[in-house]
Each structure stands twice: as C-alpha cells, then as structure tokens.
Image 1: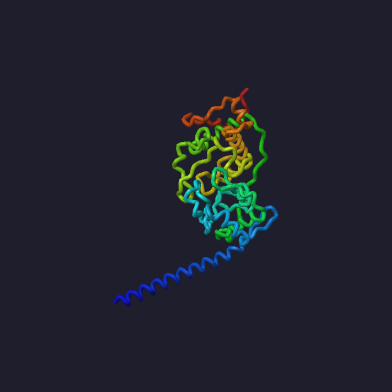
Image 2: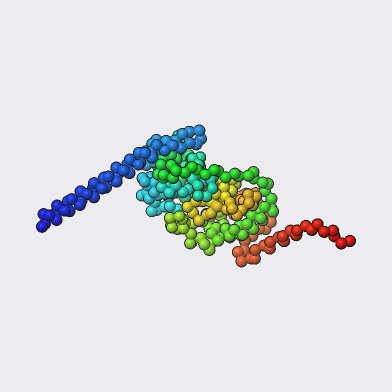
Length: 300
C-alpha cells in the first residue's frame, strides 16, 4: 500500500512539474514574441530586445521582472511603482483612458515623476531611453490592439492678470479641489486620507505647498495638461468635459500662488490680500440669464 501511495505521489509531482514547465515555455515564447515591440521618439527607434539588461539593472527592482510593479523594493515605496501590464499611465498628453504616445513615455523616463521614487533617467542615452520605452510596452498586449490617443490641444497661454487668479481660486472651490489638495494646497483636505489608486492601494493627493514642480512636469503647460487629461490610475480625473480651456489657465495661475517659490502669481496674490478659500462660504451667485429680445416696439 505504501509503495502504491509513493508511486501516486511521484506521478502527481511529475505531472505538476511538467505543467509548470509547459507554462514557463509558453510564457517564454510570449516574452520572445513581445520583445519585437518598437517605440519611436526623438528621431530614434527603440527596440524592446535592446533594453533587457538596462531594464533589469535600473527598473526591475521596483517595477518587477514581469513589469507588474511587484519588484523587491516595491513594498518600501509610496506611491507604488507602476504596473506596466495594465498599460495605465499618469503622465500623458492623450485623453483619459487612452494609451500614451511613445513621446509621453520617453519624456517620463527622462524627467522622472515628481513626489515619487521614479527618478530622472536623463543620464541614459536617447537610444537607451527609447529602448526602455519599447520594453515597457512589451508587458501589455494593449499595445498590439490599441493605438495611442490623439494628444490634446493646448491653447496659447493668456496674459497673467489679477482677475484670472481670482477666477482660478473660484474654480478651485467650485470643482472642490480643496477636498483632496486642501484649502492652501497642503494635500490635507478632508478626503485626502481616503483616496486609493486603481489597484485599491492608498494614495496621497499632490502637495502644491511643498513642491516646486508638478507630478508630470514643471511648466504651466504641463499643469494645464494634467487638468485636461487627468492622471489615469489615480483619483485625479480629467476636467476636459467640465472646464473650458480659458478657465483651465485661470486654475494654473491660481495654483502657482500656492507653491513655495517666488512667482509673479504669488506676488499678485499678496497684493490682492488673497486668503485661502473658505469651504463653508456660499457659492458665488450665478449671473442672471440674458432676457430674450422682443421684436415688439417699446412704448413711447
């Protein structure tokens, strides 16, 4: 009886080992197929196969060998590393829900992501960076079935005025940005401790009060882009359907007044005596609707 049990156990182990080997072979085959992925930016063509060693050296510790964001360092990192298998990215020039362009990913690799453990990899050559972009893409089949979204249009930046800063503050209150970012941009709003990312992990809102740069850049255009594309995978939505382009610039100007460095916006806000918003204050009354014009003659 013991001999028969031993044979059955040995057989079961052999079957499981064979199944595991078969799975590994399929995974390896898929990996090799996906390593044909390309990327194009900065007049350079990237090849996933060319970034295998660089990815393992610079990226796998956080993003994981499988690109799932479960590298050996991930447990210590907040916010968590990006899961490339989902092909969901914060920093994009494309509408919410769409894939970023190769140029978007190329810029992120070079610039890094502010207020995170993702550093700038600008010391790498353009060829190394675009190869890494192709390698990042090879983790998700979305790149085989979908095309990147069309980058949004960013209108010319208008002249800075005191009225625009005040309008931006009103919009900050109307959109309830303060609920996450706080009334003075310190990331301490009433909802700040309840936020989670798309994988149900705690995530903090951006702290404008302490940061001189933004999550995805440092210019006014970068901040405008964040409003209109949103940061996919986070609670920060796109406001493209709720904010007019001109209003978005007002919000850019107001948020500049919350940052720690000296800016023209901050100087104007000081001259205005601008104080943090009062969430309990009543919303500004809406302007009266225009009355329809009558064709009847007016009485004399």
